[in-house]
Length: 150
Length: 157
Image (cartoon, rainbow over all chains, first blue to last red; front, side, top):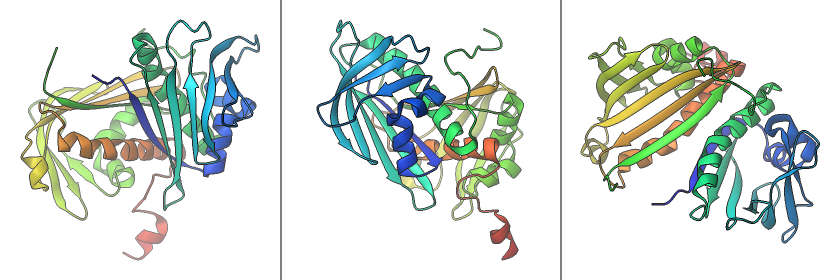
């Protein structure tokens, strides 16, 4: 069975703002709490650096496709290269009502079930927080929130 | 485990108290604002009837409340009533779960039907992200998506 992860969210924003939120390190840090660092050109390296400024690389990879502000496709690799890379595609589309439809597809996860489990929990946190930031300016440190009963 | 079923799962985190998210999910006056004009009728108690209406179609879906634990969890036995190809697929099961994580409410929708490659699940896979994005905007900003009750729209009615 496929363990592809697909998540769609609709945001009152513009494609350019959503693109910037994904690709600009300081912008990403505000809702993802990590930096995304690259020149975002096809074939370039990208790094997902820890937001604590330790410089720790959480994930890295290669830019497979970049069509600002519409589409970004990257490989998603464990820095220790212990598993085959997976792949993330961001599709950014205009809705007819001032809404941006952002589709995040994380696939090629067959070789890394632990990563599949981790990202299917992580993407909803990241993308809900992105929507909150763009619509209200507010965010929550999503990696520190605790369940009240937990 | 080879179970012939189809499912759609969506998780969203909304900056609002859990009770407010529950109320928005279950009360028609909220639903009409963010559910693209649609609303549901039920008393949300176990065994109760459940019906959904959309302005352009009338009754669209119906079923029964299978479990109810406000404001934490509700399970709906849910069948489409207005598209014959979907109605034919029979009843689905929709689980809505809410929990509180600091300032956020985590909302998980799991919608399942015991049929492989179900068209019903394909249909709701397109609908839920729109509805839940609209719900998040409504609760966080007051402005839902496709708000049919905007002041301008109301003035013409």
